[in-house]
Length: 381
Image (cartoon, rainbow, N blue to C red; front, side, top):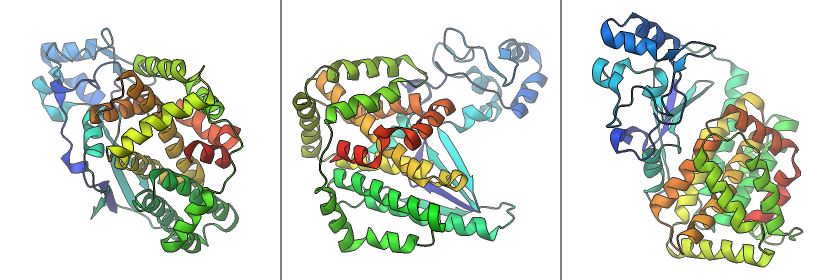
């Protein structure tokens, strides 16, 4: 089996008590069956303490104390880790912020942006994100049809990343191009099972990709961009709210943009984007898009909907950009790297940590007019 990870994956080290937004606060902490059995057998006063804080049900979890894990002490360190050792932690505590996707003969792992330290690893390097591969032992029964589909979709996902990392083009052009590329891939996937993927990739490579970019700028803008913002942001406001930070941030974005004119909306947006570009920080949006495309792109193996995965990446960029503009405005015309990490963390924590929210958005990308390719393009260019 192939293990594929971003180059920075191995560098992650938990900040523990130095973390500003501890994953032991505000989140339900599920206990996997193996760890539950182990905790049931722990003897002595600490074993009694473990069992007194476990809540059995469809999924066993710790009962939070005022929003905190009952084993997070006053120094923001874990008593389980201190008493029993790090190997005694439940699976979710051991793995987070690491996430795993398996398909075919491949296992991919990444770090989630809901963790501030993961955000630093994603955003602080100015160079292009690269990926490392190693072979790991794994019993896998080969299925030729599955492996062929995996191979073709991998080509599509990897080329989407290549488009986003093409620094000869403005970041807005790259994002628009990756949407159109994904649309062409989806048509081929639906009609021919990706038999034409090499030809599609060729159409979005070399000189042709510049021609494609020129074509994007010839599109006629048919809609008020502020209206498009309202319709899109409304979909995200309707998600299950997981955290007060998201609720407060979304309220500030709405308050800033909801009553202004189209001209004022564009002035706010362009003022921030000019500032961002002058600072030479477009690579941060590049890293953001690469993160979403890598983490979600190959889930198309299971539902054959590659376009929805790219729409999710682009829609995430659009919402995060809205949040960035509001933060920039609130900061009096300043936006630090810490702001970049923080805004991405708030979005990720709200959207990526709820299967219900992800499923709602997946349906929206398929059926809601606001996520039609032409409308999304108008929000980018």
